[in-house]
Length: 189
Length: 180
Ligand SMILES: [Zn+2]
Image (cartoon, rainbow over all chains, first blue to last red; front, side):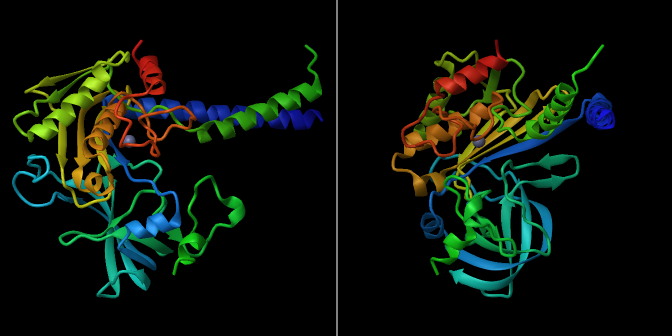
């Protein structure tokens, strides 16, 4: 019994120790007044799979072959905006996913691969993190729900409801409140 | 000192669980925001249509007229810019904040508002746009997206953007925790 208590105490101290060590390291690293940039993206949320698919003009499955980062000017047209009058040609950080297309459920894709974009990415010291964004990994197979544009890459509809892992589908038991699952989308086709 | 063994085991387990559970809790605050809540934005009146000038004016007033201890003023020299136009993407709003890693204090922010997405989804364009701009200012005052609360909040993703244009009591209370 004493050994168990001693073991637990050591475990607790070790975890606490790691925590303190981490804090010290952080303080060291930031001694040089380093600045970072974060990005908050606000997207539409969808209550149902129907609503999600209805809002999309390109739904497909495929394997992620490459992930890269690029600054892109996604503004429409040069000169003053027809809605607001504002002029902006600034580039925004994006992550580009090159995908080998498997099956197209809605819309059409001309070639066997496609590049889709999502705001955020890594550029040297600047890490543009979009919070709550779903994980999209190289080599994995997903269903993507996107919107297409005439003069730039298609976008995922939002950060957390637009990519679904085809090899690890969730079970109904895991469903969180209002959560849309892969099976809900596939049922529509 | 005599330690009750059961108590000791319980305490150790509680501590371990505490360490494991803490990071999972939903955040109300981001790790960056303005130092004192008194911020400036670059003059916009000469860069926008009358309609959009009004939308930005009202979004700024929504914060300035609230009981939050914040103030947004307009200055020609400000590095902080509001950029609203049609962007080829699905987001309504995008806020980038450059901040000091140690203090979290923001030195510069840019708020982008996508009228293309707003136009496609809004039933009340002006209010929807104001809801977006007011929300984005919330980020500069440390507020995180989609707080885990049953209370009404301008930071919630599922708020009705066609009607909610002002910071809610929950938002004001949180901002005032930062700016006492
Ligand atoms: Zn936000």
